[in-house]
Structure formats: C-alpha cells, structure tokens
Length: 235
Picture: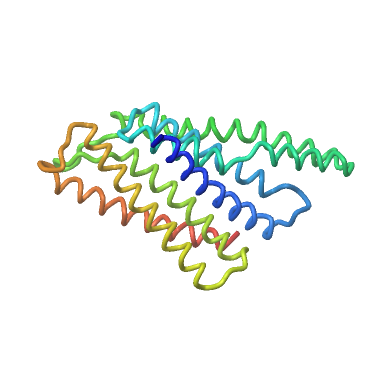
C-alpha cells in the first residue's frame, strides 16, 4: 500500500511538471509541431537512464517506495506515449506526413538515445572507485554530487523557461521557485546522507562529514541552479 501511495504522489507531481514544461515549450516555440510532448519525452528519458543507473544499478540507499515514486510515478507521468501517438495521428490526418515522420523519429530514436546517454552518464560518474573519493581524510561521494549538480542545472533551465514563457502572477512564480528549489535541495542532500549510511558510515560517528557533504551539495546545487537560470534566460 505504501508503494502505491508513493507512486500516486509521484505521478501527480510528474503530471503537473509535464503540463508546466510542455505548456512553456508550446508558448515558446508555437504549436505548429508537437515540441512540448517531444521535450518532456526526451527530458524524461534522459533522467530515467541517469536515475536508473544511480538508484537501481548502483544500489544506492533509498527505499523501494521512493524509487517507485520517482521512476514509475514521476517520470512515468512526466513522459507520455499516448499524447505522442495522438499528435502524430493528427499530423497525418492534416496531411503533414513529413512532420509526422520527424515526430516519430524524434520520439522513438531520440528517446532511445536519451536513455542511453543517461545510462552512460551514470556509469561514467560511478566508474572511478565506485563514485567515492578520499580527500584530506574525508570521504566524498563525488558521483552523486555531480549528478545532483547536473540535475540542478537542468532544473534552473526549466524554471527560467517556464517563468519567461508561462503567464502567471508573481505569487505563483515565487511559490514555484521556493517549492521546486527547496524540495530538490533537501531531497538531494538527504539522498547523499542515505548513500553514506549504506557505505557503512553512521550519523553518530560521522555527523561532521555528513553535515559538510549536505552543505557542500546545497551550495553547489544553488550555484548550478543559478547557472541554469542564466542559461534558460538566453533561450
């Protein structure tokens, strides 16, 4: 039952995120081609490959419910095959065969390439010493910290695009920024602590290390979110 609830919550969040991202992309690029659906499918496929490597194949410490909420719930609802099929059929009915073929190729081959790229990124990050390095007597999970930074950069780009392209009040803009960034910084930091616990560290004996990693991850992600916001404003 807990797993079903987790998937339901993740699915609700993914559906909202898909609506916001696809709407922002359509307002940016127009509706002459299903750019919004293609964008969410490519982004979702890339994240699925990366997170599958980090959360499942590397056996990082995270409960099954959370994995299901993220991989099945959030990313399952964030991406959409049915909307892609419907939009492709509409293009064919309108006589836009070339656009229909481009849409099919973009979603099928593009998403396959995005999943492969995500898996490759995850495997590359964990290739050296299992994603952990020793520096100045400290154990640093560099692979997960880099993955967090990459995700933070993408979140910054998405947030900047949405804020620029989607019409909403300042209150909603502020709420989205606080909720999106705050939730990500908290969850990514806690995930690093769970990873260290799985590696044999205890919070009682290694509290300084864990707090230091949490703060470092937060500051690094804030920097990359800021970089993503700057990059998104140029799009």
